[in-house]
Length: 471
Image: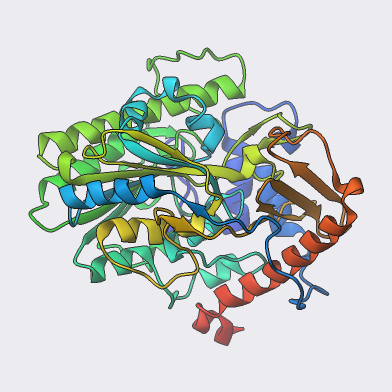
């Protein structure tokens, strides 16, 4: 059996193809659901089985200028970066990607995460970072490549081939950094394990491939390891660090459905519903992040480390009818995430509302480390920031694309072209659809989404040349 085709559940290993893995996961999740359509794997299976919507779409020319093109100037960001760079000219970077954690879940409730709250007191927080897609694999592609991402078909096939464009691990290695990725969640869904194996990490730990440790004592649920177990794998790696700076990335898993904590761990939010269990899981992950902070401090590394935290996408708990988990919609709860950049030298909290994409994270971390990268994404910490439109889509039926342009949030079904338009300054909960009263904006935004959808796919696939040749 190929290790990356392994499936662990209740201590057993099961062979799986991608679709079989979905089916087995669907069957093995212990958390009962009243409606199968609310299960997080249901839209993933839908996406895999539905015919694609790309036929007939075109990258036609048109007006791509944002409606709100006002540039923002934030001198406080430039001053903050100067403070960090003065204290740490070449800082270590600890980059934590939280599963299914959006901006509202974390920045809106820091009391639930005391260790992250402590980091936030000396940090820059970008509160409007949009995932390109409300699922892990596609958005990790955007994060790792600095903004290249796939909107259409072929992701699993592409991940079997080398990505020849910019990659975070390779870029940091070229800048003299040691690199490592440790993942509590199993990466073998949607081919992400294949992508990360080719991404250039000096050390890669994927619990999904650590077959000998698939024991009940180490498994949190069918998605991931107990996070403290993964911290034990990180500890010797940190112990071996010398004067060379490092990029250490950590992916958690507890905050993915079914939102688990180890038996006996405190559950301060109760267990009344999925939302409460999710908050408990985030509280648990925060405690494990506290362990990582303690390891850094014990080794004298904390003062010279930027701790960067983001979410790979959001999570929905019925804020809109039928919207649960993350892949069913592209409302704010599904698609808007954040970027927290903490360093002890900063000594203050700065919250910034620039509209950004998860593809901007690599360039932002590189800038803090003192080097530049040529990517579609741009550093968010620059003093002067040109406003732009950011885009996102989803593949589960009904397929949708959308954008954020200044105050405007646009969502449209791709097949039927049914539009939703919201003014987020007055309607942050996206409850009042203004599409009928703004026909010209709907036409403009629809055209922009179509061009982006086609161009983003083509530009990203061009970075997988051997995948294109294999067709």
